[in-house]
Length: 450
Image 1 (tube, one colour):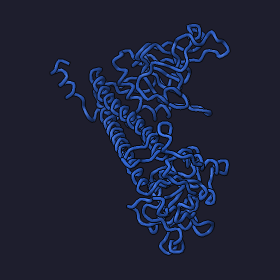
Image 2 (image 1 turned 30 degrees about the horizontal axis):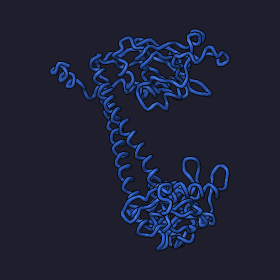
Image 3 (image 1 turned 60 degrees about the vertical axis):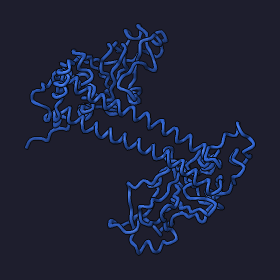
Image 4 (image 1 turned 45 degrees about the vertical axis):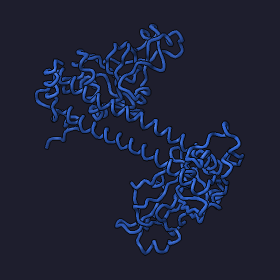
């Protein structure tokens, strides 16, 4: 019985028969890199751009023109580094395999690369996109114990489907256009995220005045503010402990009252767990349930629509005290240990409490109460002692509306980004296997003299 095809070999079988298969070494010169001695200052800072794999893994563009370090002519000749002409394809070949970029200026690399100088420069852009499909093959051919690395001979032996240069160029143009749209949307998403954080800080420290505008900052209108334990806040606002602002704050059941073995596969009553609580939203990816009968024993821990859920545990990526509201679309649940449930009194709207708990002031206070080394924790007593700024409820509602508006814009941009990425993934597979032909585009270009 024949062995099943590897992922990359299977990809090759799907490419058109009229696309010749060529070895990497037959498409371009494979060039390795090197690192000059750090003990010889004369080998460094000589103006020749010298790139490392880390710079490619964090690169947000297709092209690279500047590097963190440069080497001298002596550094180039005294190491394994080689000067790559512009329009070469730089590909990482150790640890992280398959990160790539096209250089716009002459450039050298360290030894973590197998770069390609195409014999036909017009193929560079097509090869850039094809490398995305090569990653499983690079990993399969790599070896090493500390980290994976692919040798020059193995790299040069990889088979590539290479269409006619005009067809390859058009495929690359289509994918480049999508990449440009994706990068533009990524920039919008990043800008909106920064605006969202800035607006939330302003809303939680300046609020909305009677005219529906952000109050001017304290530096411009000090008469509108008073000094509080949370800093300068509008004179009309109060500062209270979170426990005072709450109708109730409860932790989940402890010990034997709710354990993993109580979970059931068939949906009964939902259990809210730590991984569901993200900063500002409920992550519904991972679900757990208990029987109706078991949930009835834990009625005190019921979670209803729009209750605020607060995480008592956290790490660097998931801060202690992050909060979200339980979605209206889900049936009532119970909260597990390490998940606090908050319900505000008339002086503190739930949505406002969630915004405050995800803001800078609450983050700073939570860090002061944190305990633990690997996993940080805040206990219920300390959570209740945290201070919260409290505008009048009608102003809290206006603050919520402003935050929701920029949230909606941010979410729409994220949805557009996901759509573009999905579109590119499908189109890339179609174009690089020839399942969708660019012949009509070539004919259209020829008809217009392009």
